[in-house]
Length: 309
Ligand SMILES: Nc1ncnc2c1ncn2[C@@H]1O[C@H](COP(=O)(O)OP(=O)(O)OP(=O)(O)O)[C@@H](O)[C@H]1O
Image 1 (tube, rainbow, N blue to C red):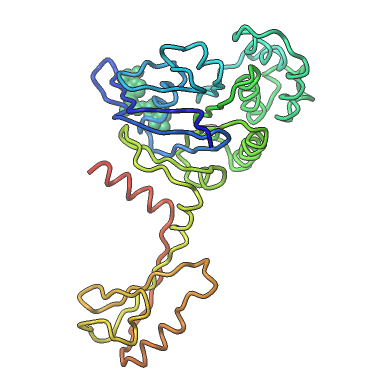
Image 2: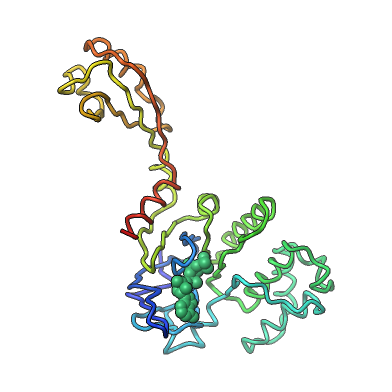
């Protein structure tokens, strides 16, 4: 795979001295959907603004499509479509005029075929002559995306595309993003919502306190999510794991009063029935059983806490 965005040791210190990015490095592959997950103030918008050349980095480098975002700003910017957090649409303007205007900003000539393709793709073709103020919230968001895509960018940045929108609209947006990926657009989105990252991303990056704490394939993360632990409370404390249980991934915890067994919920067999039979054969008696599932939320909260420590 070819990397389309290359970020090397990026730092941003704002004028007041606040360090919003503390050396972020990341390669984004062509055609992937990367979700940047992080709490308020983590640095997500600063990262996106720096990649898009809106904010200048204090040090480090960013290249988009091979263009350096500072030294070769125009080249880099032409590769990028940006949908900012805030909606900025003129209420009295017609949909197709506002979208055409955005293309003009890049010095590109009018292209009716392109306009039709994008408006159809975003289910806005029937609304092309409607004024912005006549549109629903979801349609307005799609107009913002059309404006960001009309100059043929290779990479689309969506800064919190579903912040504050209801569940239905959120699903709508996820479908739009999936459709764009099919067209070959690389998409980087920021979100607070873990379920959003789960639903649409190929890779998930977790950012907090200006640092990228993790970047991982979503499926690998989900694999971790599939892990469940079974805690078997024993009637009497054991000093070691009996030989009969050596074939199982068990550990003795809580001063020997409990056994912890980790298993994959997606495996064909969890092994629990055999483990419990082996337990009783070994002469250990159980008092209680508990299961626990780690979620992306746990992983996320754990990482964010570690990062803050
Ligand atoms: N222009 C600025 N001057 C000084 N500090 C800033 C400026 N812009 C952002 N910050 C600070 O940098 C940190 C990161 O902000 P940023 O907007 O990048 O976070 P975020 O992850 O996008 O948060 P949110 O999800 O709330 O949008 C915050 O502490 C913020 O207060």
